[in-house]
Length: 399
Image 1 (cartoon, helix red, strand yellow):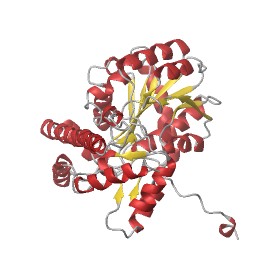
Image 2: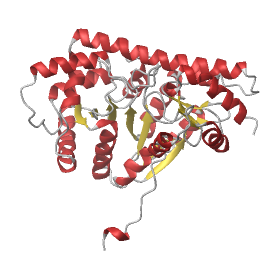
Image 3: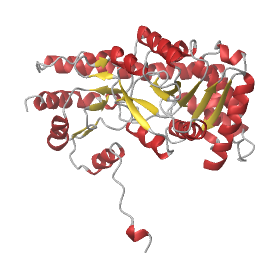
């Protein structure tokens, strides 16, 4: 029989960890592996701005008809202004186009299909390390994947020298994937000087940039987090950007994202965008309606947007506060290891510096779940679990 001859796929390393956590009967278990924001109560909240938009949408919506292939144009316009800034030169030239997608992952996959078609044979270069699913998404589309150096474990930060030296050698026909902010999994971001160097290298080498912008607002702020993207686009005339509202608007289950393209001219943008729509038509025909309608309302309504910005800032501050609490807690236990680098990292994730053996010890003996390689979701650290986590990490360092 056909199905009986198919082997089971390996479990997703992150989602599989969550399933194991759910089955763990120990009452003191802690999940620092899952990639979602949680509040002090351990809940992934529905933002108040989204609740208010839901009420307005319920009163105003007149149909559940299909959306256009690329989603409503108004949604695309609102997302483009958010991602690039309203004063971005490409917007004035009508050289930017945006297609709604099922989350940031959907944007990455549509972008990968586009690159496979129009840059056949071009390699997609990713930072080492990167989000586990990046390689799978581009590989499934048929794009060859290689890696460039990014993180220096010894310094607990970005190795800009090694990164730029490698980027300078990448052929003009290839694609470079860049995390705009809140690098997943390390939390280590380029500073302004680093982005300026990357921009110069990109202009000289001629490779094509593809930005993953999944965490806008969780680094230094909604406007501040786009700085690196804008720096590169001052030197490079074309790019793709994958954007997501899963994190910064809490619309995880609604699957709301966008693929944006920047071209040299309105004519070039229009031609390229027609091909993006052709690909979308063959993959999922058109995107879901509800979540994007909520995001659009939040971005377009002045009061809702102000409320959203306040809520994003509150989430950002909670994450930054958790970083400080963790560092202070570990320092108080005199572990012999300096964890101050965790405060310098941005976004939900941190490369903790723990070994796989220590990660296994924490899961098996202490019921603390984190991803292999020592990546932790700092947002998952709840107040009542802080002492247990710090005590357990201190114990793991004695192995």
